[in-house]
Every structure is written in C-alpha cells, then in structure tokens.
Length: 284
Image (cartoon, rainbow, N blue to C red):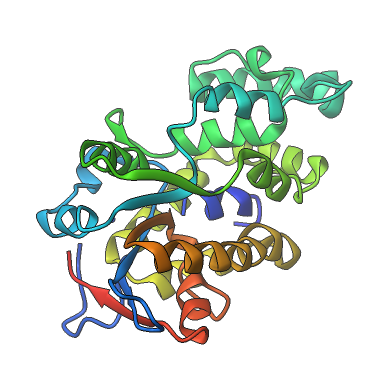
C-alpha cells in the first residue's frame, strides 16, 4: 500500500496477549541510577471507543508518576490554532498545486468521504487532508484519542504536563515528506479509500495485539520511505532520549508516545536499553 502516507502511520502510532509476556504497549523503565521507575506507553492517534479503555492497572501505573509527557504539551493554550498556522501553504493553495482538472475530480470524492467541502482546506498543506481521511478510515462514529484520555487522568491527578517536542518540531518532521509526495498520497487515498480502510483496520488489529515489534514491522511493510522514516521516527526518537533521561532523574514520569516509536533497533525501548536502563513489559 505505497499510497498510504508514512507520516500518518507514524503519527497514528490498545486484546490478545502472548502466553509468556515478552512485549507490551506498557513498559517499566528502571535501573541506571533511577530512584523510582518511570513508565512508557505506546498510543494510537484515533481509535473506536470500543477498542480502547484505561484499565485499573494502567490507571494505577499512571498515578504513581509525577509528570505526564506526550509527544507535545497537549494542554498548551491555542494548540490547534498554532497547528493550523504552521500547516498553512505559502503563496499557493491546493487547486494550484494539483491543477484545476484534477481538483475538480477529487473534490467531490473528498466531500463524499469527509462530509466537508474540500475548499475549506484549500489554504493548507495536504497533510491536513490526509489526517482527516485517516480519521474517517476508522470505521465508527464513536471515536476516542487515547492520548487525550490519558491526559485527562493526568490532569485529574494533578500531574505536571509536559511534551517531548514542540509543534515546530513536529511540523519540521512532517515537512520532510515533500509536498508533491503528500499530494500524490492524497490523490491515491481518495482513489483507493476502500483499500485505505482495510489498511487502517489491519493496523488497528496489529495495535490491539499489543506487540511493539509487530507494529513496527507492519509500518515498514506498508511502504514508509526509508529517508522519511529516519526523519519522522528515528531522529525524533534520538532527540527524545536525553529529555527523557533528564526528566526521569528528577521524578517518576509517564511517557505516552505513538506506538510506532517503541519497536525496532532504533526505537525508544532499544535506545533506552543501550543507555543502561532496564525495560520491562507489563500487563494491563
């Protein structure tokens, strides 16, 4: 499924468990001088409500921590406005980029799928269109954002809310996928939306297995360009590690990041182990 944009797979990035617990979405981080353990949880950007719930074990783990870290500081005022301003095209719009003929062909398809006139998003980069299509590919009306649900709990327990990066950092990573590639993905997603729904259904199924390496393999098999994977996954992982180390030294932290960031030789779990931490998968 080469048309399915790697940036969405990465950012979208819970149940059957193996008889022996060798992997999980929830990991305890200990050792290497830490006085108290911290925890790492792999999220998914959008899910059907029936596919995600916060178990008593997960909630109890979270409330032992003092700080809650997501990829960005989710309670920052005006976050959505910041995002929209960063996603605005400069000097061009979508009709100009794709051409009038192509725009007139795909615009009705976009409205049919999303219920929104495509013209409303004309001033914005195609990634915004792709994000909305990916959300619609989750086949249910009752959707939930796991990060938001965890944030609500963190606020309830009066935890310190922080982010591992800024909006600018995320947009810079997204922009590593050129506009023409984003546009190509947009056209292909609209042409093959049934297939997009199938891919998304499989991705959710893999996530629900709660095996980080299976998630990582699925992302690679679904056509993420190697250079873009380096920008959207590997480089961000590397930047997060020193921040995580510093945060964990001061107090126990709960880190909630896309599940696609956890697995693989360059994943957050592997990088923390290389720095001397003990990573233990937990049932929840």
